[in-house]
Picture 1 (spheres, rainbow, N blue to C red):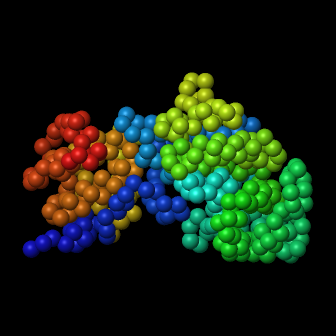
Picture 2: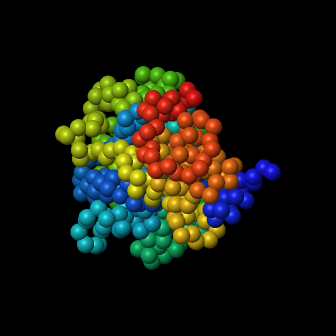
Picture 3: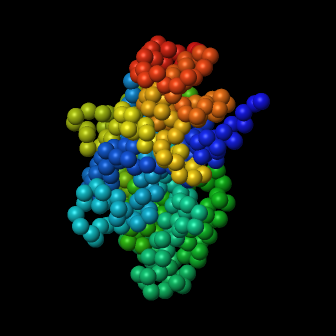
Length: 426
């Protein structure tokens, strides 16, 4: 009689579902498990180099690299950025700066937004800025406030009034103070924010056409900086993901690459961006090879991983220890438990954990998708646990007949076999 995999997961492993993502994709604003203990050292380095240094006049641009032996994606850059945005906006950077070793409070109030370049072939940097403003208007989780809602409340407390016209006047006055030679703010944004905060502003932003996003993205960033300044928030950390799309998308011509990178340069040179906006980009070797000459042409700060550039670079190198893999698996398994279990890693045995680290090349995104496959395969055979033997044979494509972990190290999986698997040759 065929085994119902979901019944087996629930009865044998106390899981209400397969908790792992079937693909190595981190979705924005998705409620996914996360443990700061997986890459605790890299997280603290991120806070110290990019956030604490940013408010103290450090590098205007930071680069979050991924480097592996055989690949340079799937190392958790997107996840780290999104979690840092969430952490910063929860208490306007108080926790982040404390963890980064900043002196005792009061700390400066800071904000963060996440955006990406994955549509650059059809748009440009300005839509990326527009999407960052949408992110600021969107609550991180259901039942929470957006960053713009928090900013509006701070303005109300500061001016002692909830009157929309007074809030709008305060935002415009703040822009007059910080805006330099920039033009006036867009009235529809100021009025939407003043009357209803993030909720009303999101409605206004949703009605903006793709053409307006392409042409006027900088004006939306201007509004965001003005609203934040009016609330006493003088630093915005903009996390920009998938910079590699600027380098690897074939439809992006060389002149377009040069123009978009030149726009990044423009943001570093003029007020109010030069002192209030801090950009952090994801980066890897393929992007570096293509973008190097454009970066040099526009005299942007160096992005390479080198002893002379350590202040501007954080590197994610993957899961190097089994303890990291265990913690990553644990938080996903815990999220799906129907009741407590004696072993937090049930159904995985240590041998299976070693195999997962090997076949994923230590990349957390790939490892989670491999764990999804392996859990389903074990459930189909109604196994009580997932041993190293079963995991090795599954990923080698052999007929699996599991009779318990024989204690052999996953290192016995040949490098050639693993390469074949990762490259889809098996």
